[in-house]
Length: 428
Image (cartoon, rainbow, N blue to C red; front, side, top):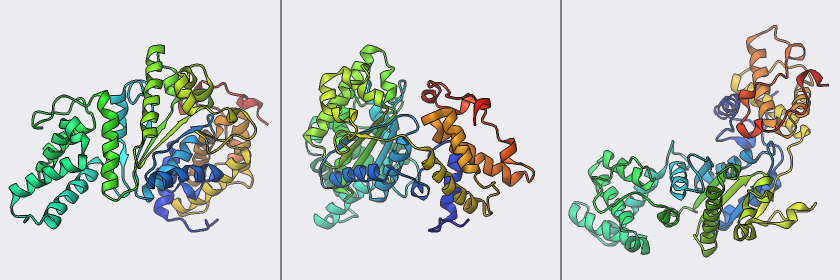
């Protein structure tokens, strides 16, 4: 089968390689997306609103297997194509966590991406921002480029103007950026790395060479620094910053005092958005338990007032309210995804797939019976594995040899908490 429209082989290889590992590809998701168009359109409205200078937020609500990670990855891909900077962070009790704002900030800054850059893009953003300040002082103010001292002083003054209140209230931030500019002019990459480490709240970052920088980034600094990063992007004529916080369920498992602090910090973040951070778009993702359970956001009434939505318990929930519910991914949708992946596999491997007619539908049915709503990720990984084995073993017969035996190691910790619905010997 030949896919239509044609898919670049480079994209097909990337997609198939990622799915072999059981992870969502970082690009090309539209090539095999099935469903979720309505939900994606609503999330894209948030991109439009943030580009217009608003600061929206949305809480995605979906059980395991509903496609939360796939949907937010599609949103991230679209945002990058539109010029946004994107940071996608999975919550972790020991690393990026809402109960420690400096760790959350560190996770956000470490994951900042731009289209066309590999790895962390914070350095690219600062380079372009500094260059724009240099262009201003040489082209608008007319200071000759060869007068390095005059240019450096003028750029330092320009940085303070661009930062506004932050330069006065948080002088270490302004000092760090001035040091970055000096390192940029001298080609001192080691010093630039020190500044980037400090800006990303790396506790091991050295500040010995950073004149005027005192201590590390504190929890009280984080919202102001995120505001400034967003403002930098807007000053560079970019629409803004998309922050995605996935796996909010991790916060439900914190100790009670830490959990309450996490929810209080989330409330403060939403309050800051309410006061206005032009161009910042915050998307949260969690299961219904995050929104409804007593250990979830309802534990803090002021947060529940911001994120709670009684229509979610009805047949017609408000999709444009604070929460965006995702329906369970159906067996029919899973079968359609497999059909598209078979086409992509053929493009990636440059040969036709050798599968019995109806095998994909049978596989989708089997894993749906076995795992219920958790089935899509596992079933897709298994489907790619079957395609690979038919390629390498001419005598491999999927209909007769495929086993639905479940290796617990391939399940995420959250998936493993849900009991298996049907034993493999009881299928069909």
